[in-house]
Image (cartoon, rainbow, N blue to C red; front, side, top):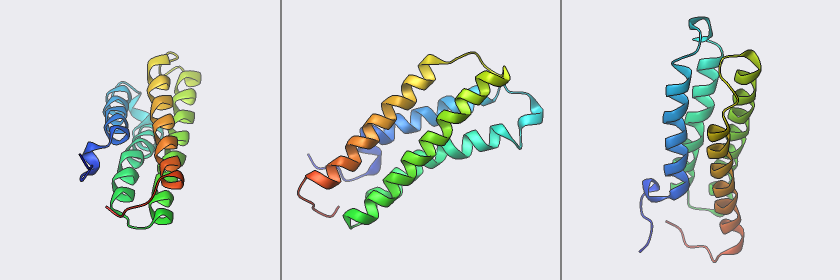
Length: 123
């Protein structure tokens, strides 16, 4: 069965779940971080599935890859914020959240690799 909607991509589903978890996690942060770390974390997290969705409908391999690469970069930014939160004492070291981010990272890498190795057919 062909994938016809971005919501069918497992990597998008995992990234979306990570966004929901980030929103829950940041609700517990100090209010003075509302326009700082909370905003930055949420923006970076949302960027991941949003760029996967945008890349999904792009036609050329290079165009798709560009958006998937932006998703990868946003995910790395988010991983830094998770480290910072721990160091600032806003949350304990969250191995589960880091593991989810690692899983999304691996899936994104696979998606990018598939553009380079499989015969290409536009969606």
